[in-house]
Length: 261
Ligand SMILES: Nc1ncnc2c1ncn2[C@@H]1O[C@H](COP(=O)(O)OP(=O)(O)OP(=O)(O)O)[C@@H](O)[C@H]1O
Image (cartoon, rainbow, N blue to C red; front, side, top):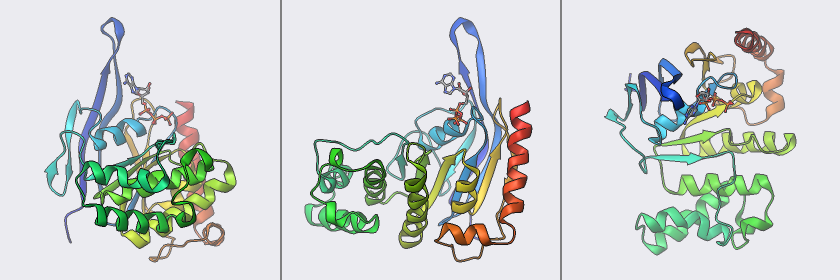
């Protein structure tokens, strides 16, 4: 079997607090992410999900352990990892097209290729009609689609998403989840997504890393193998599948136990 795209090996993170105190946010966490797969980091508030994602992004140092991408140890941010945050991070003074071209421009991608790639990914997230609009005129969901297109246009090895749909209303949220499945399929992108929404994790992920609270340890790895090999694109189809309710119940139990700690 091919080596996984990413190997997270026994990572820990201890923050130094004021007064000489310390806080261990992540303790001895290991998992792998296979190429083309979607991996969800799920767990209660404070279980270290964002800290793990930030370490993978190279935005946070590791206290111990290693993270390898294609066998190479990560030691800082890099173009091989694209990040989408919960807050909309588009540039309001640039059009959708210019927003998506921005990273490529910095990376020295020639103008024509930039244009073609921007158009491709804007189309993929369903915003072709709004290519010359400004983000401030768009809804929250549409702005998040701009952020996704912008990250994908830089051709990252892995897309890192921190609660990407957390700020959206319920209806937009599930539409974005469906869009994400479509985008991941069409672009064969590997995705690591942080969420505390159980249904979102089950719908999106091929593998769920469930973290315990304080300090964040890997409590259980859940493979929702009741889902068909070809990803389902409609959320209602997921709800109808045998195995969904059982998986949801199991994760709710884990959440409740962790909440009581
Ligand atoms: N820079 C920092 N300095 C000190 N403590 C931090 C820092 N960043 C995170 N923490 C602490 O680490 C723990 C884990 O935080 P983290 O944001 O990774 O959890 P999370 O699972 O993503 O939570 P949530 O779902 O609420 O976003 C928390 O107790 C948090 O207060």
